[in-house]
Image (cartoon, rainbow, N blue to C red; front, side, top):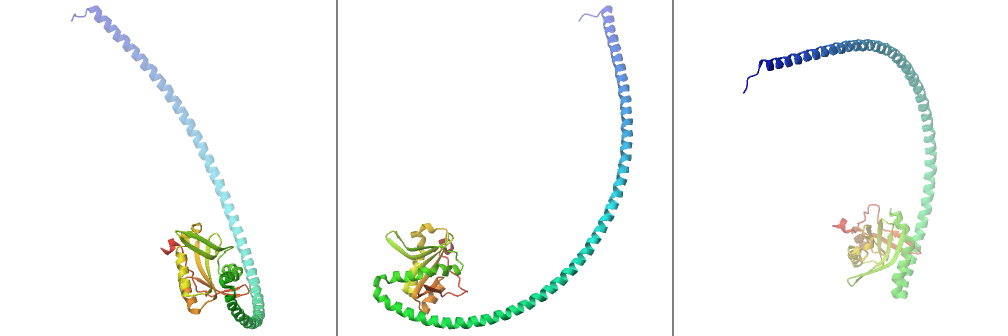
Length: 296
């Protein structure tokens, strides 16, 4: 490597000196600008401090005014509440007096009404007892006449009994809490060679009551009907989703057969002729629902 000449060294030295001069010039410019910026910052900080002091003074003044107004409002509110309490006490006293007067009047009226009702109920009971006695004799006579007619009608006797059941059975089950509104008669279905015949079906969109009608009800009739109820939805799938109840109706219902049907969850209806049907189940009866999902 060739050695630098003295002239080249001088040139390099001059370059360093020129660069150092420029750096010092730039540093001086930076110091000047920093000084100007610092002066502006201090001026701005002073202005901020002044404005903050003014704002704080206004805040304290506003807080004092707010406290004064709150104190006035609180005093007014307490005065208002005291007046309301006084008026409420007066109102309560007047209401108590009026209620006492009303209770006394009502007790007198109720005593008078109860006395009149007791008298009317006694009179009505006497008339009903007389009427039931007369009706019982009429029903017995009617049933004897109907049984005599059974031999005359032959195969049409079952249809006659159904005709006696139909007019009153809808209202009878409505009185039992079922909102049935539609009646279907003599429904028949054949599945796998087995024919199922249902005498009467009552329906309301939620419940259905399947009714078997006989002239004289027997235990075998009840058992056959229970078997049909177990297969009911197979033959009548359109009623899937309904609550299914069963009932037996007959012109003659022996007491032991009625108890047997009752204990198996069936409604028991007795036909008395002249469109008269009566429910033999008592208020403690709970009907069985013949639905596969419930039975299972």
